[in-house]
Length: 86
Image 1 (cartoon, one colour):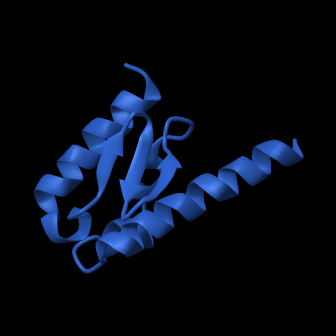
Image 2 (tube, rainbow, N blue to C red; image 1 turned 45 degrees about the horizontal axis):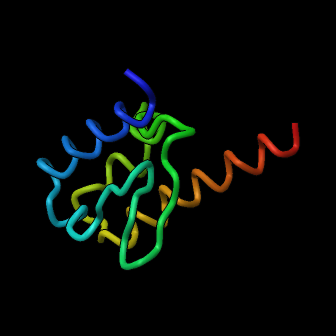
């Protein structure tokens, strides 16, 4: 299973558990989309945000969809910056 499929399955599972936090988020190709904004989620494992004492994971029940999208986008942007510096 490729990383996008892992992310897709994780997001579907999270949507089932926290529907209010993921309402309006959609997957299109390899992008997570929210209100016309998109971020490619095929280059990192979203489960990295859900490990250990992750503030993101422990807050999922109270985050809005835009918060979820922004956190994922910041994570992707940060990882892209690190890879570009290497």
